[in-house]
Image 1 (cartoon, rainbow, N blue to C red):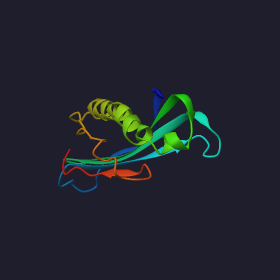
Image 2 (cartoon, rainbow, N blue to C red):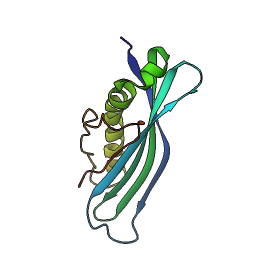
Image 3 (tube, one colour):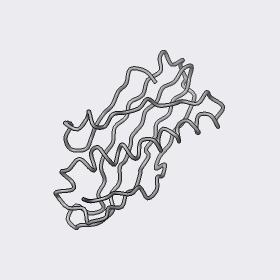
Image 4 (cartoon, one colour):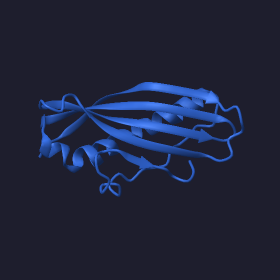
Length: 139
């Protein structure tokens, strides 16, 4: 059985600002994509790239791209790409790091810490192509 290990995470893009207008309700949208080093060659590295848009009362807006880099115990091949590992296991392993980062960022910026809701990636397994959009009603 192939094993995966989270190597590190990095903020690729972050925009945090006060809204020009008052935010009417808390909400966020989240999507992710699976990034492979080279589709044509087998490698033991891949990444999960989260795209987050967060709107929080009374006036906070956050847009962010956050990548978690993984290493596998065997080279990534088509069987792996089509398995549950990159679509369920890797995002489930990586998401708590994103949640923690957002809570710390908002706290250190002088706001109440924002705790993103949990995401059940297993329930999303039927979504194809590794591009899943989650839109909870409220944060």
